[in-house]
Length: 256
Image (cartoon, rainbow, N blue to C red; front, side, top):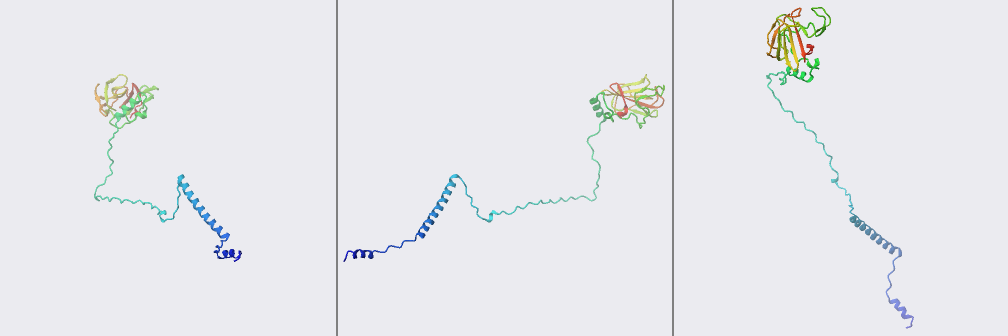
């Protein structure tokens, strides 16, 4: 056997090597595997980073529980009106209930004179005194300057209010108080009574035909003090009524 034959047989008897894969297939597989590993590694790194930094990953999963039913508004339920029954034959009246408060002219009089002193307005004092006659008041000569009915002289100061009344008509106290004078008045008043109501307020009753009270007597509003007449400087039956506050005369009509 020649030297060339032996080597040739060795090459023939050795197993043939497996065919090498094409370059395109091998490189593509490797790239796919590399890409797969790369995506997996990236996701793992993101998860680790999120867990480390405290981020919360929320995954929205469709579910029917996420849709809530609309809230129905509660409708008010009207309460049934109670059934009220009454006796059809019962008597129904519309009388006004009695009031516990009552106008007290005496209290008002005290309040007015204490609060106002001598500067009392007619409006504030209105209604604090009662009428001084048992009959209706008929005004004649008023308070203020006038022509004297006796002398005819102009500019005479008429210190009170005259009320026409038949002689003998009851004259009554305009408010409660104490009688400080009862007798003949030397300056034209005739038979005269003076009642002190306190707090500087006084009333006088003049030209009376009779006197019914004495000095020191206590009278209440409406009590009899005398009878109308025409005594003193008078031209006919009437009552001359005066109101004085701290000794000064004021218009009586502002108090009646």
